[in-house]
Image (cartoon, rainbow over all chains, first blue to last red):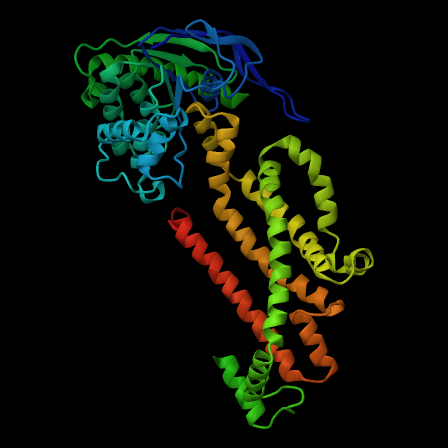
Length: 259
Length: 238
């Protein structure tokens, strides 16, 4: 369990013979322990870059990212990440993919096998232990990717549009699955998406991000009593918030296009 | 099969002088003669030792260097200019120099094959390594892998199918370089046998040499295919 804080972070890309691209501009954000936070924003607003900074895969041009007050300087197993593209290791079976993280740390074989089995059944893939990723559908691959990240028992989950490449029915199932798993141990999550329904359904807190350069333009609390299910999307409460976010993002997209 | 029928027709039908294109039975007889006087096996043995020594040496160095060159910019900057320069020099043009320097024995053949394949392999492997998706490496880092673990447990297995293909292709080239080297100067080997047969005007023996090289190439290729199917079954899933 852990909290994340982002303090005055800017990120600039310098390309040869081109003007610098400012991906993030003086962005600050606090995510307390155990919160499911979602960033929603238009494509290319730098929301993925923010996750890469927190993962330690990129370095900010200025400002700092911290986990539990410690400066993030490099990637580590305390911050698990699920990517939009399929990142399973194609030469490993489902079982071995999920064992990858625990194995790196030298967990005994029997223990990691038992643990992998549990996570496989959590994502409903019992019977597919010995399949290779290329034998699975897109939705199944992302379920394995979830299981692989959870099996590594990170303090924080960073999710970069993990369901973005899936069809909407599969996506809905995946969202419920994620909530189910998350409810078990309520880790700190930062989830990035451009899908407003997804943001509202999953997030306790939704940060709306502007077009490039990315800044947080609004923070919306989503308080739901009882379990979160797909039905909530058509409730009054959700629709009013959805309208608000749509209006904000609409202006942002228009602004981005006129640049 | 068609090729063989055409060969029979052209020779037994009397369309082509047997001195230029010997009929199949004559080639078969030459094969049996050479087999039983032991010279064929000796030449095959010499050629195989030369080609495998050169090829294995080249591969052992080219594979790791290629992987690093494709994935680490510093390594690429250090060796790419040299590699690309040498790569465009035809190795056959270096044979006279190599003969002057190291003679016409095993070492020279090994050197020819090494130079001919190493610089091609390294570029091909670097290309394979550069095409490993960035996200695959990123995912490994977020799972807690150190840099060396990423190389050994992710980069290496991810490049294996591509490496296998590279080896298969460059092995074919290695045969060409070997035979050329043996044709230019040698005292044994299949290329030497072919050259001697030309001097003594034994086209049937030339055919034996060519066919044996073809069969050996086919066997090597089958071996590489087997390796891939047996050890990398995942790479053949669509």
